[in-house]
Length: 288
Image (tube, rainbow, N blue to C red; front, side, top):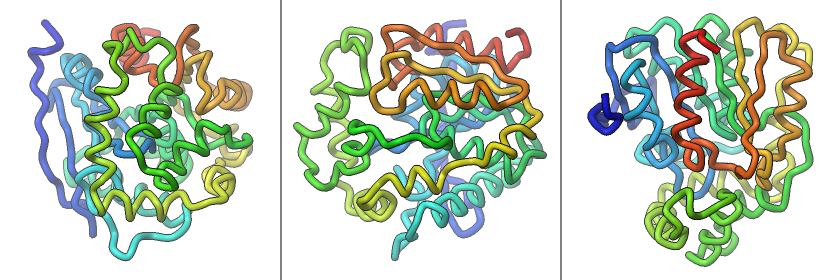
């Protein structure tokens, strides 16, 4: 089956006090896979997973929600304060989403900050997670990189030129994403100008930003007790989230595998989309 033949549906689901905008592919086809996007300016679930959902929807029931404070999901007003409060809201939202859809357990794929949320799901709600894929993840101790600090500080200088520079860091070879990063940035830039998105983002990531990373850290004793299978995926040349974060987890998680893409930056799921999708499918199916 051609990946493009699997339709993606976009709906809104009531999840506790929040409205969750959901992109879904392959409903009822197989095991449920919950995709959690990252934290770049203007990001949404569809922007993050537009190539993964149609392909993996051939074998799995793929759910990709806009997290609270992102995209078309609820933007609390006034916004939440502190990363701990945002994490609490995201976990509440995701558990309510699974409940609303009648899903007892799901495989979870988390990108960057979405990887940290996946780790917290494994910690706080292990009974709801079948396995996890953590891609360029945070949630472990490390010093914030200039690239991440600039990404989270986008609204200090919210220009199109700034967004183009951020996307240059996210991609190792622009030809793998069509060659025109400026065009991609222009598409995303419109989303960054939404006043709700701006209010949420600036509340999430005020300077100094190292503290937000520190609040997301999952303790070592918790990592050692995670019994689900975990696949770590990282771009070797990622200047936003260094490979060291996955190496840290690789040394501490019991049932873990690590796959590293050379000549790859932060957008593994886009730069190596076909290989990434095959890797994820094989892991979720227990064939890796």
